[in-house]
Image 1 (cartoon, one colour):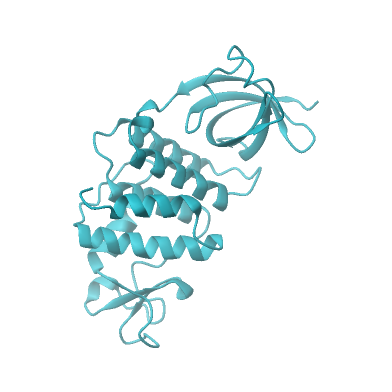
Image 2 (cartoon, helix red, strand yellow):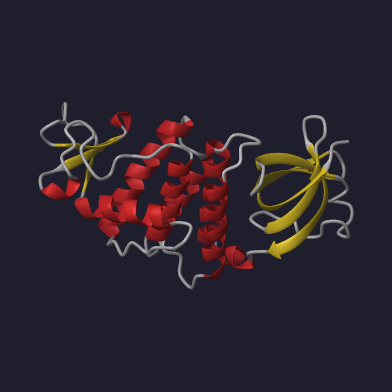
Length: 254
């Protein structure tokens, strides 16, 4: 059995294994994403209790094993109980967790991404209202930390500033905004200057600040469309959590 390691960790996913065990996917601050086996967790609450529930933040002790880490114990830091208050909060937490799993390879530390996700979970748990704009900033911050930074400040072809007038489209295959003079044809997603600048500012503010974008519904739909397309392109298809989240955000009367 390997040496004992200790790290704060967020629970991204878990799957029942055999009669009483559970395989838990953790996003640790010090080691990045790992998968660990929690023995007997479904038979007795004494060892882990609810400390390995989805979206919780805990200080976890684990040892390296064959294929999977062995989870020894966990000390609860935050249960993020407010996330369970409604389906929208759960869907956002699931979406950001799945995105983190897609973007971050196993055993590759991403300390900034860890802080972004931890703050996002706290925001989802504690905020009186779920602000989509702020969470889109967190989504973009996770992408940027993984090396996927869409160009939102200038045309990717001629470097014409987005704030310099004219129309722009977001073209996923070009990695960002393309001005009307450089567009090869009627492709891409029309994007407003305000959406680009506020998204970029919000992403750079995380995790130090949860920046509310203050966009109207039309602009939010635009931000939603470009990020959904960008994420899908880089993770190899639309994520499962994105479908439920899209349905909830598009539902009448939300």
